[in-house]
Image (cartoon, rainbow, N blue to C red; front, side, top):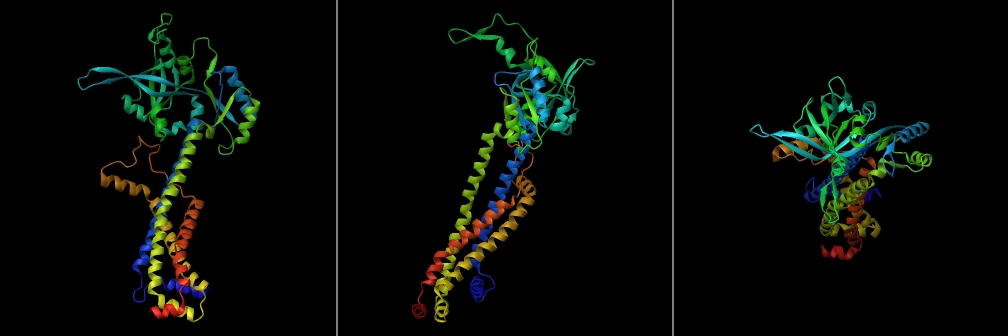
Length: 439
């Protein structure tokens, strides 16, 4: 076995040169394939992990809802008591789409009213937002202040940096909020399918909020849509006077967000009639899409290594024709067909192993300096290659998973070794007399 490995390493370079250009080309193909695979898999893994973390931050570990409607105050109290009995905690939350009315001034100083239909109100106790979302750490301007203040007669809200830019608001400015319920109560559908004013409806005033602070969680889809208010202010906006509803759902947090199936089953059994939805179930379709995309990217990019394996096949076929006389001499000296075959299979293995190692190292460097590379490419092209408004994060995420890297290396080495199989069979079938006569 040692002499076969020695010959395989010896055949990687020609007689007169220290390095073979053909061999270098084969190794380079494997190197680039492994590097691209490693970088893409790391970015996909990092994106998935960051996405899961952001989902947990903005949606809690699980949510408890009433399938028949909103949760009343006594139901919320019962849920919180049940959660405490299961080493968990929960807080009532009001979350609903709203229409935001804001004022925009043109170049001539004229003011016009605009409606933003993309907004979602998120109301919860301020202490819970600090405890579970760390919202106080994400305040970029102003302060974290929610709820009503009788001193200055204001209902405070915290909006995102996207909203502040879109609505042209700063801390201390005010904006109006319309609930969908109030707007739909103003109209009704007639028998012909048209819409007409509802004579039984009463006029209402939109809720006015004062911007207390501006936040940025770093999850662009959440930041673009959600602003925070006090729980009582949101209840007054959505629920009718005398209605005892307290929340649209209860956000809950357990001991372990990634291992909570048993806990969710116990909670569902303890609270029949209520829906207990874990964060993974609530985002199942999205997480499945991420998993499928990662798998598809691997199968598509593995073709780069496959092309490199065909290059190795080509190289070895050329090498066998060049070394026909040497193969004949080796067989005349007693080398078996299996020994000759192993020499060239080991040659493909060495090319695959060398390319995999160099590709792994190069891939690590690309991942390590990915943001610098991205910034440089953006500067050269003059375009932002990772715009925040289209993606979920401020920077390109990446996470190297050892099992993924190991799988990539194994696949690359196996493909390169298999690429050497046909030339090795061709070399093993050479007859000594024919090989020497050919020379």
